[in-house]
Amino acid sequence: MPAQDELDFDVVNEPLKKLLKAFPNLIYRAWPDEVKPDGGAQLILHSFATVATNTYETIVWICAEKPDSRGRKPEFVLSIPPLLRALLDQVFTICFMSEDVAGRSVEFFKSEWLEVNEKLTRLEEKHGNSRKWAEFFRTNRSLQDRLASLTSLTPKEKSGETRINYWPIPSQMRGRCRDSTTADYIEYLYEWFYREFSQEAHLSMPGLIVRGFPLVLVHKGEKSEAELEDHLKRVRSDTVVAALTLATALLSEIQGILNFPSVSQELRYLWGTLGAYWDKPSDLYAQRYEKLLH
Image 1 (cartoon, rainbow, N blue to C red):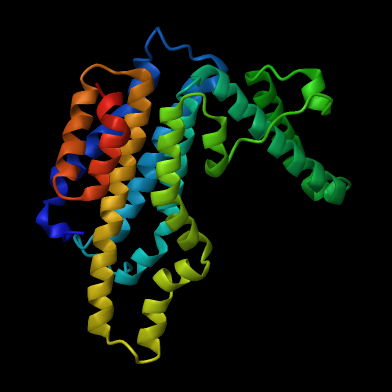
Image 2: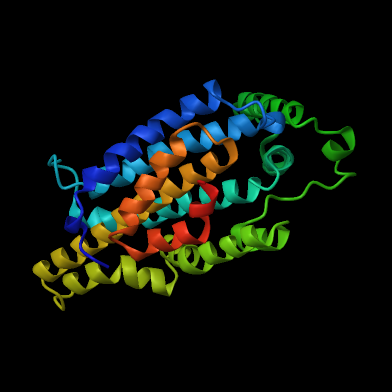
């Protein structure tokens, strides 16, 4: 992959930051009439856009060389993979939801209600008689009731008589897709991004090699500090490209659903600029976003 300094970072970062800031406002103030906000779709997309902005800005701060920060160490970039995976998980979810925004928004909240209910039930079995936990249970059961009302949960679903499905993980989404092109793209993301990020987030052996061995080898004296510095520069470059690409992909998925005026053109500019320097953004754009943004 070409070095990051072949492209002025701000050429992409500034328009991307502008869009990341604009999307939460657009989602609430310019929601298109032809897209039903039923089932909490508006809340989901707004939350995802807000969380993605925070995650992206965190990654950029960790990777930044300027302005200098006394507490920021170059090796912190090795801790970013879980944040990249969080961005990727959001891309998966919105892509999967795009086939049926209203229906899958309901499904998303119902699955969340189920997981909250199971967690609270386990805790109540263990701590239900403790006064220290009483306020916790009151607050969380109240939030759970709000979730139930948002999704029109039926009494049979609450009792367990009617089964609620868990929200599918990325490896399960492909089999649930209605459209083959969406399924193929989810499979592409899984094969080329998700496996790698998951290994690094969970520290399986391939992930441990990537995140741990550079530090271990220096500690053991088998690599020099200069070699570590060169390695971290390459990791930082790859990490910034991944963050730019995933944040742009996430906004493109939302734009594919809501189609705000003029935004597609701005996103196409970002894809074109990224794709001129690196292969992966170009591949994603050709696979899905060239068509989606037209």
